[in-house]
Image (cartoon, rainbow, N blue to C red):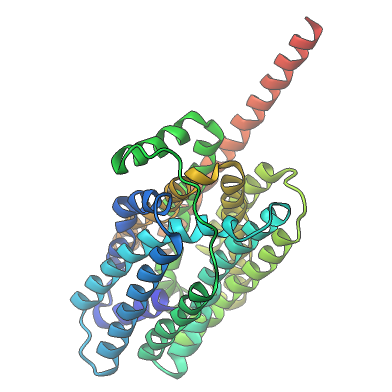
Length: 383
């Protein structure tokens, strides 16, 4: 909610697509520097206490933004500073948030639990903007910020009620060496590296479409704040449908193929969105985009958590967060700059084309690797 409402406020104050990208950059760039330390902390200390600190910090920052907006004192400088501080708290929070879920779920239900957690996270990225757009049109931007601040109370109360099993700590090599150990583990496992490239490319070239949605709604489709909310509602519907389908799966069969198929379909829909002029065509395409982005990211997240030892999970999920969010600042900047210099339509089309090319190459290369592997197995059996 806060993300979309801030985008609309920035557009009204400055009328600058570049500043939309700059705000996203400052909100996301802390993940490059704080996510891995946050993952190391999550693997060493009480994950519940770490989350209580970070969630409370984000709640207070949202409240400050709401108050400044409601009294008419908000400026672009204050928005950028609050976005940066919120980004730091979010980067420290995310690894613990993800790593704590398997601590709460029986092994037999772990796949569905991780899928539901990842699905709700990605669903919120689609549903939140929908609520924000509707609230913007009826209650104003300050209401979005107040509602966002209040929403943190649910998780804070939940964290205070649950009991987390004590973390089984491995021999501790020290904080810096702990981070290096996580990087080395990822580097030794090629499947993890490949999985991390999926959110990386989506963050650099695909997801920045969210940053440009205020400009898409107003300049391309010709609707206001409420129209923006309904457009993002299309993404929300797609996200909910995909999340329920994934959570209902009882098997990991064909998960890799589904990740790449979802990412490819998202890329095609993004290219088509750049050509949209009609509200309903854009709504339909955003529904497809919401569903496929949840599919790609949720399945990648689930695969990483299912294949990572508990004592390394915080650091691996930190790298996932860096790939998903840490690279988005650069994606937001490039999308904002391209939209400012050329056009919003071209920025969307360019991002979709780059994503489509990469995921097609990845599908072909992985298929060839599987064929080579099967030939090698046949040869060994014959020998």
